[in-house]
Image (tube, rainbow, N blue to C red; front, side, top):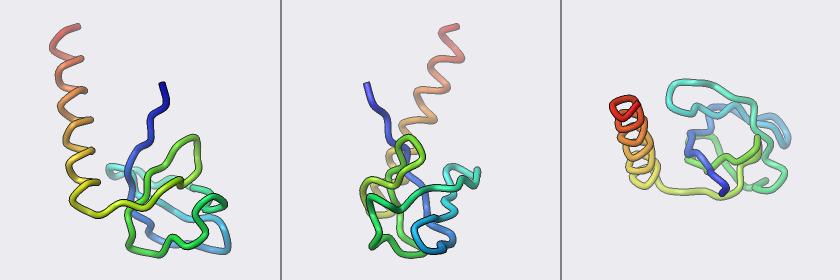
Length: 76
């Protein structure tokens, strides 16, 4: 199973960007998504931005991840 996580592009230089993923800033390659702009939300998989998404979709996805995390903590 593959999992991509939404994040917001904070800055970029050439084909590298700093992306905020739930409060954590990560270096992310834009090689697969060179048109990504500062302020856009992207899906990040294995260090690569692979798709742009809108802010609402990003928020919903992050909320689901948080829900899964809480479920896992309570189940364990």
